[in-house]
Image (cartoon, rainbow, N blue to C red):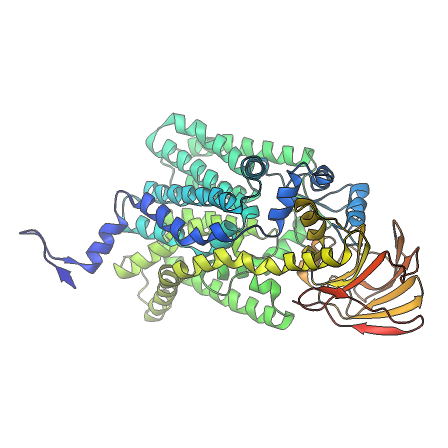
Amino acid sequence: MTEPSAAGAPPRTLATRLQALLMHERLALLLALTATLLTLPALWLGFHLDDHVHRYMFSGLPGSAELLHAYQSPYGIANGDPATNRWQIEAGYAPWWIHPQLLISLFRPLSAFTHQLDAWLWPTSALLAHAHSLLWHFALVFAATRLYRSTLGTTSVAGLSAVLFAFDHCHGFAVGWIANRNAAIAAFFGILALHCHQRGRADGARALLWFAPMLLGIALLSGEIAVAVFGYLIGFALFLDPGSRRSRMLSLLPHVLVLVAWRIAYQSLGRGARFSGLYIDPAHEPLKFLAAMLQRLPVLVLGQFGLPPAEAYVFAPPALAQLLWLFALTVTLWLLLALVPLLLADKTARFWALGTACALAIACGTHPNNRLLFFVGLGAMPLLSQLWHGLMQDAPWLRTSALWRRSARGVAGLGVGFHLLLSPLLLPLTVCSIALTAPTETAAESLLKAGAGRDVVVISSPDYFHTKLAPVLAALNGREPPRRLRVLSFGAVPLKLTRRDDRTLDVAFEGGLLGSPLMELYRARDAVMPKGTRVQLDGLNIEVTELTADGRIAAARFHFDTPLEDRRFALLNWDGTAFRPFELPNVGQEVEVPPAQL
């Protein structure tokens, strides 16, 4: 396909027009605007999950200061203090099996400030809070495009890299969920730090070399994923820095000092993660982290380069999860095989690859999820672009093997095709996927409707948010909360409930509690709660009476200080859509309770 051109000039084909677009001087602005247009549906999503918790923490309402203290920041679950963790059980924010010394407290003061700003300026407007998040994503895409051009030149390779990054569907969930804004903020400042360092070293702009470590510090104070920037900085020093070996190493020193200072502050402030199965702090548990990395890294690679998303591995049944891992490992090895000749021949590709590998390793600190892949995509997109261009232009580094060429074309074609054609369609959908959690708010509302002012006893709940949102939503909406909130079981666990006497319930958990990864938020399955352990709450004594073979809770006894027929109690159970009144068996009888499933 051609079109008329100026006299004496060759006709413009579709390929030359696309190339001209990729090299357009305003590509950064065009892509940032396009990415914002694709993520615009976020404006009408409303508040979800932690969004409500953050609003409550900064509201100044009764109880909000206590919850903020328990969490330490919006990016926390527990501060490691046994007394505070016990308060969380009493207040209905944590399950009765929370580890007494559980610590999940992430140090992101700059990102936290953006939520506080929302609470000051537009406390009830989800639309404006989402608009705030979209501005950060706009800035992120703009900055990434400028970095690609600075590193790869004003070329179609840089342009295609920027397009792939701008349309990356992996960004969607974090952009659509207000509480996950930190990912875009950390990525934005991290990219600025890398860009300033690259320009300062390549162009001799000494002022930029002062700004780079400052921006790295800002990125680290926005989110831990910014540690990945250090992988890209090392890659630049090894492969692209034009200076001497000594000056290259010295150029990293300010960044090392910033990283060390950040980690010291992190430790001294008591931040990090301990005793949770959902988060692993590599500084505290290096061997456990390495084991998790072997399991999670291939799944993250698959999530970045195609489908299914990385979080599918977490939600899949064990047998399917194992098949998914084998498929992810196969895709990872196929990708590596295709990239090896490029990496051996091109130092810029080695720079991107080292940064991508470091970002992947850092993302393994929690369960696989596409929302962790901002810095992974930063390096993965130019690698795909370089591979694609090399194959199209018959680059000298290509292997002569026909089998390798077919394999590499498959990788490049599927990777580029997916991110050019499907990612722009998936991005608005992944932005809106946070709306799938709306049933948690419906569940909390049903709990409040049945249990306002009463001692609510929930037999079984699908997950933690279905009940912990109830006191938060009650406070935000000026409604009466439950007087007490006690939940016997969480997760899709079949129960056998025996009425021992008028005040005592024996509950057997078929297969044991903490059987799924997501249920390990408040206690890792290997942090055993011994048989005979007692949890004394106001009006309720809980005793662990039986363990599974691997040390998880298999049965517990719940003894209330008042007969359960007392009118102060509201006994509820999950019926698949809401919490409904539950009829207890008579004394001496037992009843089977189906798993609380969504």
